[in-house]
Image 1 (cartoon, rainbow, N blue to C red):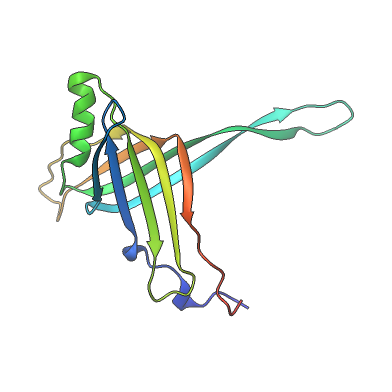
Image 2 (spheres, rainbow, N blue to C red; image 1 turned 90 degrees about the vertical axis):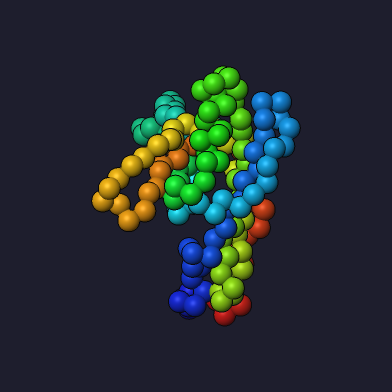
Length: 159
């Protein structure tokens, strides 16, 4: 038994939705992030070393986690600059929620949707110019404080 090629998810069919919030937590915008070329969110589990009597080796225990991500975006929207400028000009932190949907209508494994909550921009290229570039992109780095799996892939019936 093996995963069939037709059930591998196409990255081009993913969608990314954003909900932005102001400094009071009031919802500001819900939109598709059409400008994102690629995005990756990572969870790092923090492991600490534990030494115990009678155990010759070092053991490990998980103690918390940290979420971060990055995206490469086409220079086709000022959305991210607006969020950063609110902090630069007013020291107001605007958070956002991202929902990343991975789906491929030709696949039998369905859709996976991950929601990243309380996202904050940690680094952003706010301007760029490049005479040799076919198109301009910029990099967005962010953190997130919570996550939910809204929808899971299913195992194909042939497995």
